[in-house]
Image 1 (cartoon, rainbow, N blue to C red):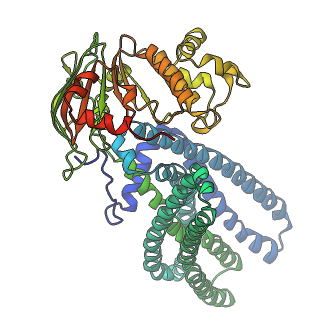
Image 2 (cartoon, helix red, strand yellow):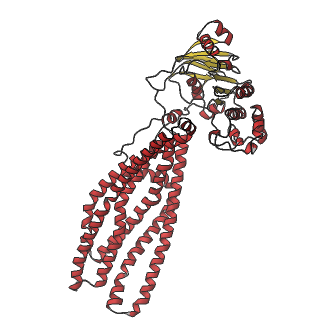
Image 3 (cartoon, rainbow, N blue to C red):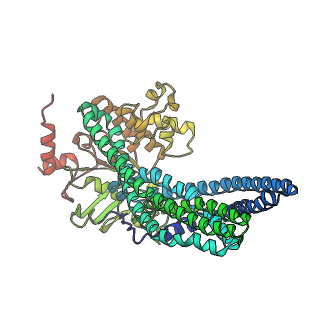
Length: 594
């Protein structure tokens, strides 16, 4: 069975610029149409005032400098002040409005992305590193933020200014305007090619940045191992090599992006020179007044900047839309572990679990469970033993539907787990594993995670039952002590007891214990065992343990080998039968002690 979220490669050919922009705006900009309209009005005012400032050059030249009309100085001065004041206010309104819309779109996108990934199957997280996920959340979304708040806004504003200046120039002198625009077709093809190259280069940069994030995460999370093996230099070299690769790819992208500058500058110079030649002769011959000519030149020069920005925006937009492809790649992944149409909240009264001829494989090439059948009676303690890779953890993962069976079914109190809603099923299961997960928060919040909104009294009672209250009270701030990332400020035994307290507070009828004491010293193991005894009382409990001494008192022990049950019974029965279990016990209990 392939993992439930299959990563689909998005090709540049299929993910066109138009479709990506449409998806980004239609899906996320719709709630802000009102503000977008306000921003559009502000942009139109900015464009109109920019054109007006060019138009004002005409009366200044003709009436003041040529006709020497002093009466025109004051009204023209007031007109200039009014135009630029209005332009400043409109620019402020446009900037604030469009930035607000951009920030809200990105916030909604991040929330949507997190909401989507938090529902993803476990197989997705097994196939995708946390560094890759974080990179898309931070690096790619940051690029998208620039696209929405800057690039797309500038496209709108500069396009309006370009339209305004073009209309004004054709109004002033259609022939000079035609001369000015003869260079535009020449620039289109190179600009499009540069944009395509930029899209590919940016995608490569984002992939390398994701690799960099992964390497950093691994180095810092495994810092103890790095230091113990004196591998600091090895890690330095890995990071330095990756940084250098990113640097070189960024330099390449910069060269691609900058390739449009000499082209646009040269074409712009040719256009202006052609206008000066034609217009200059027209003024000298008296065919055109100086005011019209200088007003036209002013408009051409003012239009040149938004035109250059639009030429560069294509490269920038392709850079940013490469990140959009990576974000939407995650949003397009569909979970397979979902509620079926007939799923409902069923009443788990006893917690009687049955595996009926269950087959399971992570992929078609590897069969993990083979027609496995076993029973976990309600309120009893059942243990799974066997060598590593026998399928024990897989059995445990199938009960809360972290994965679905390939064939057969699993029932709880006679109801197929696939006919229960996921939230209801998992609310009735508590998990305590060898790898304790604690959040970088207070002791109280980590325990309360088992039952959000629990009272202080309930939290303390759970901690007392887990033999954790005493050591908690010895911490600097008691229940308000920050445990650090992954609970680094606590010992292994303390972390495990907090995990047990969390499970006690959840008060679920079904308990899954995945080797909860295998990594503890003798003293910590004894304290955790006492806490587990309280937790397991009157609960349906499934235990996986490498230390067979921890499961000797189980009501039923299943010996698992190659995905099948090869023996079952109580400890003394299995020993007497001289089964594989007896061999495992003999090998373990006769190991030399140092």
